[in-house]
Every structure is written in C-alpha cells, then in structure tokens.
Length: 540
Image 1: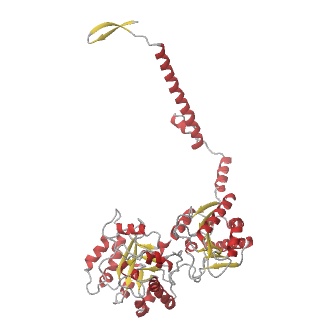
Image 2: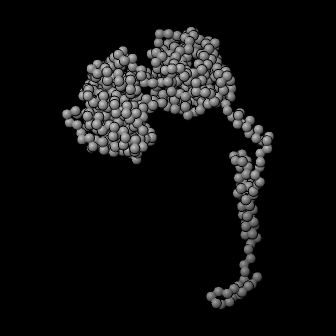
Image 3: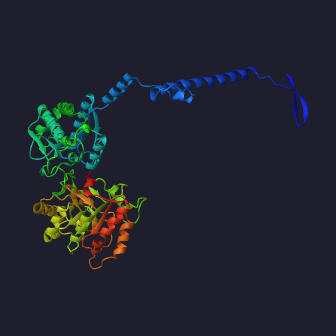
C-alpha cells in the first residue's frame, strides 16, 4: 500500500510496510496474557477481600455504592448476644523464676523448670476449657522481674492471677498464699484452688496462709501488687522425695483442679471488672497498704555470690544527657545491671521525681526538712545509718510516722565501700541495721543506698539476697560538707537545670543549703510540670 507523506515542506510517496504474520501473532499473545493476568488479579483480590475485609473494598474501588443497611431488631439482638459471648474468663499464669533466676534447687532438680512444666500443662487444660490464658513469661530461658510480672498481669485484663512456685527447707506439703487484706473473691479463689489441689493428692495439707513467712504485715510481691484476685501456690518442697514424686505424678490432676477452681469462682462472681471494690479487696480498718511498718521484699536468691566480681565501682551520674535531659550514664548502668535489684534512674519519660535524703549525722536540719515536706505534701526516702538511728530515735520515729520511707544506709558507712569487705561483713552491714530497726521500730526496711556510692557485682547480689532494692541516684551535687555549704541560689538553679523524668534526687539532710531551698525547689519543679512521687510506687 502507498500513501503521501509530508516532511520538511516536501511531499513524497512512501510505501507502508506490511506486518508479518509472526509479528501479529506475538502482539495478540501479549495482549491475551495481559488481560488474563488482570482478570486473575481481580479474582484474587475479591477472594482476599472476602476473607480479610468486609467484602466491599473492591466495590468501593470501582465506585459501586450501596444503600446503608438498617439493622433489624433480630440483627441487634444477634450483635448483643455476640458481644456477651466475647466476655470470657481470662487467667494470668505466673510460673515463678526462670532464666538466670532458677529459684530453689536440690540434687539437680530446679524450681523454675518444675514451675514451667506445670504452668504449660495448666495452660493447655484451661485453653481446652475455653479459658484465655496470659503468661508472665513465654519460655524458661528468660528472667522476668517481679515488677514486670505485675505489669504484664495488670495490663492483661485477667480475671484471676495464679503464681506457681515450689518450696525448699525443713518441711513438706502444699500451701497456698493470699494477701493479708484479701477480699471475698480472693478468699473464694484461693480456697477453691487449694482444696482442689489437696483433693488431687498431696503429702500434707499446709493450709491457706496470708502475708508471707515473715508475718502478716507484708505480702508476697506479685500477689500484693496485682489488681485482680490472686493466689500463690507452693507445690511441695523440692528437697522432699515424696513431694517430688507427687508433683511428677499429679501434674495433670493439679491442672484440672486449678482449672475447675477458677471456673467455679467465675461462675459464682462473674467478670471481676463488674464487681464492687469491697469484694475485690477487704475494706476492714487497716486493710489499705501503708508504710508504717515498711515492706518486706522477697527476691529470688542469687547463688554462688562468692564467685561474682568484687571489683569496686564508684557511682556517679556523669554530665551527658539524652533528649529528655536524663543522664546517659544512669541509663547505661540501668541496662548493664538490669539483672539485679538496683535503680540508677527510674526508666520512664513521665515527669516524676523521687526525692531521697541521706542521714549520717544530725545537724539540726531534719526537723525543718520534715516540716517543709509535710507542708508541701511530699513523701521522701531517708537513708539512715545505725549511729543516726541510735542517737536520734525521735526523728527516726517521726520519719516513719509522717509516711516517709526509712532506708538502710549500712551500720558503719565504711569509707572504702561495702565491696571492700568480705561477704559476711557486707551482710552484717545491711542486716545489722535492718534487725535493729525492726526490733526498735517494728519496721521492715527494704531500700538500700551504698555508702559513697561504691559497689560491686558481688555486693549487688548480697543486697538482693538480703531482700533489698538498691537506690543510687541520677542527681547529686557537693552539698554534704557542713563546713563548706554551697550558695543557695546557685544550688537551686543547679537542681532545676538537671530536672529529668524518673529522676532520683540525692540531697544530704545535714545541709542547711538544702534545708533552705527545699520548699522553693518543690514549688518550681511542680510549676515545671513535675510530680514528686512515692518511691514504693516504682516497685509496681
């Protein structure tokens, strides 16, 4: 075929080339494949849309509109029924210990492994019964701290919390623990669980108990801080061959008994979110937790303390800070020693300050400091030595009576630090003061500050095994020399400039500078949006 084409103002006759047969077949094949792929994509998209969405996404893409549907009365009833069916029983299971924290052990048998095995069987039994289960740890290789277990439980929305443990010592048999101020539902749950386990077979029924082994003035941490009815089961003594035999033989029976117990409790009381407060926690006088007798913490024991490093480390927060003005040295040490019960800073971005004061000797400042704190409504931690407690008993009693926390600052405040002493001497530095305060004031100390901030990995383990939490600091300055006190305005500005979330402020109570600027510091920090929080809240 020929045709006329114009190019650059000139006309010319050209002949149109004919496409070959092969060229046409290739073009047809390409278009066929493209159209086929497009159709397949549409079909796959509609299939996935039905499975993963509401079946209408494709219609919205191609512009198809539907008239809104008005649910009928029958549909509304169906929706309400489905909503009610979604309210199921949920239980948080807490297999005690785990990871580098084995719990107690005997002749090669390890508590954390027993707890984990039983918890897995209980979980399977509960899920088979339609109960939702939340675990505080997902394997037996990871250590989960007590406060993290509590946080997991409280965030789970569980109806009940059950902690699984084993004993060791001079005894045998099974016992179940609940808090000293347990409400009606907790009492019912604990009784049902314990009686079910006893019915499945135990060497000895040691009964339902409240508080801890040290007395009813304190509770085991996990059941004392969870917000739902909770109990802690001690499944026999790991050094008792009879208890071990029954534990191994009756795991499935124990799991069935615990499952039946929570079902029975739930059928009687229903969802715990709908229960009145007085059925959750006892409202008897004195049931509300206070600090008038301190707190007895129960941390897992760390073995082989003598083999840990005794190298002395000198603590100081350093000058570098992150975007929140938090000292990076504190954050680094908090991570480095995360496996120990120690706080260099409270790792949070909430604008909270934890005020602590060290008391070595009394120079007349403490009464004024206590007056200011009372006026401002602030609670602090006062770390005292044994000589201070012996020489100023009225002030120690006032610290307790005013609702502050009385902290342990050692017996003698050794200048070289606890880490310079033997294991036995370090234990005596801690427990010598603890026992004295317990005897004189009926108060269980639970926070410890290392003299001069000198510590070692070994000393952290010793302190942990004494049932204490170490409190270092994320702010301190040269305020302790009574004969060379810093300028008040400069000091106040320094305190304000270093404000940061989760701050642990260390001030010395023998400083008249601190005494005089304390009220202004509290006012200005609050004006900057900070809250002075109670240190015991960090244990939750």
